[in-house]
Image (cartoon, rainbow, N blue to C red):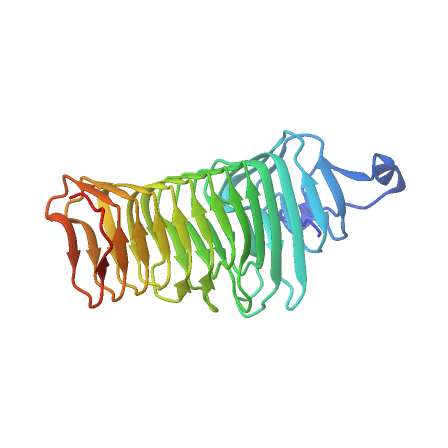
Length: 317
């Protein structure tokens, strides 16, 4: 992909692929605000600061940016530190690794100044990246891999004309996480300071594994249309599901309880304590609950308002 610096027009400088740069292990050095408009492996050689636009804009595909331990900073007005431009029906494959994005209010976005109707295909990978101000927003996004990153704001990744695929592994995200239309994704080992939301996006999500996360807020699918997920071994304030056919197993829930509005879910071996309402509230139909421990919840252990819900035994209230 390509990177485009968002300074004033007078400061917008193109990064060119010179033979000398390309000779350095095939990596192109970046040392100033500018535009990369060709595929390649780029390496940042010093801290870079922009004052009236993004440090980089990405306007091509198949771009890897190694921050090489350096900081990209946007000072002055709020905006993006890195901006990936959308081009209708074209993919934008971007990898960003090993450094910090500071200031601006948003670390990285997909879409840039393009209208929302210009549907590109963001395929992004982040590894060992720290975003200290704001978050990351890729909407639409077709594929994401985020590993060992720290984001101080929200993370928003939404599929559009196709579902979102990918993995979030071992990240710290101190805001909310929204994963729209995620299908067969893995969300594992993350520390999340807000809610973890599996939203339906435009095409619906399903068949995801949400495992071993610590979530300060709720794990929720927000609306129906995100079916057949496995939500296992998480620690969270609460779980709120509207979709069908999920497996909710081995989670530790404090204060918020487990509320199931969908149907044909299995709720098993969870520990729920300190809810201000019931430990488990089943408003949907044909759900099964078994081997759950529900202690010290204000209104009691389990309330079933739906039809056909089955107490499978082994629940301790």
